[in-house]
Length: 398
Ligand code: CTP
Figure 1 (tube, rainbow, N blue to C red):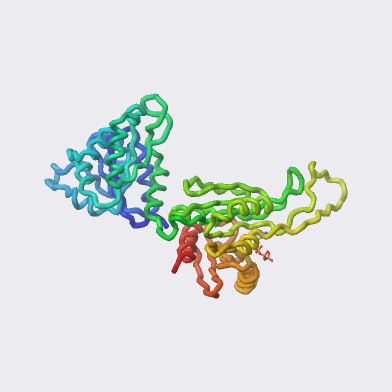
Figure 2 (tube, rainbow, N blue to C red):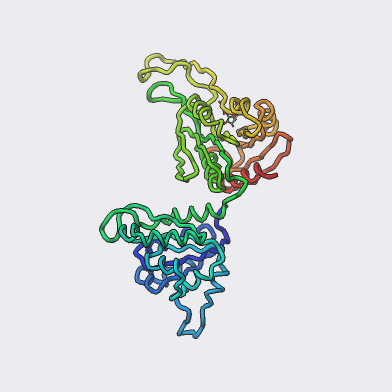
């Protein structure tokens, strides 16, 4: 799910944070969004209309009337064009005008003609942001149904430090992604996801692990969160990161720790997706000190790890569903179906190693989803991010 072909109307007002809008426009364009920008005359002191027009690949709306061409720019048409409007940065002055219906420039007139959802990212000095009139004006525009993207704390252009910095371009992007990804079927759901490998200690410095990157599990967590679910993400050692506010992160190392985290959280979940590559065995004894090399051979006795997926499936209640993953190198369909039945799953995602672009470490994947009624859906090779959205859609299809 991306912002591809979404029509985003960006309104830039005259604050120093306007320079960050260049990055924001780039991020939108990278996702394939159709971007148009409007600027207040004052904002062109902070970022040039040429920069904005070049990055957005569209003419910029500043004035009602173009004295060179004699053309009138129709603010109503601009407003109707947009799927969403996002105003960033919004100064105290522009905010006050938006709250009270002033239309003394093109941006404000277009804002007043909006029928689409509106997002407002204020940016100003900390005392202006804390002033009761700003708070009132924010409450007023919020009352119109607009979404405020709160200012953040940090270093300000005045040299002071405090709340008032415009949210970062990445945050603005995430807010829009969440808006478009929001899916009513996911609101109110709690989805527990396991991801990444587990590391089974041999001694204080060594472990048995595997090449799982955690990318598929993290992509599922982010997609579910963007769709509006609460996500509990339990993950083994990985370089993947997420800071989505709907995702509760629980980092673990070993299979036993992962099982414990799952057991602590399972009762709150409506769906469990077990994407972790859990080590099937662990050393029976963990040496207290680093094992020194002495003998020619070293035997490490392994014992079976608990099967986390099987535990969840065997304890699930009627309002819970359990989805497993199967990574197979041969007879994929047969083995996956066998796991589905043996572990009493609602569905299983089959990864067939060996196909190019599929499996550990890579950013793409191709899988089959098999449900307990033996329906099989194939998902062609695509990014793990897109695949995550597609799999979740399939799991929530009526
Ligand atoms: N899994 C788990 N806990 C384990 C082992 C596996 O939760 N100790 C979960 C994985 O997260 C995945 C599924 O089980 O969802 C895949 O398990 P796999 O190890 O392939 O299944 P096995 O039944 O152990 O079969 P195999 O003989 O192929 O290892």
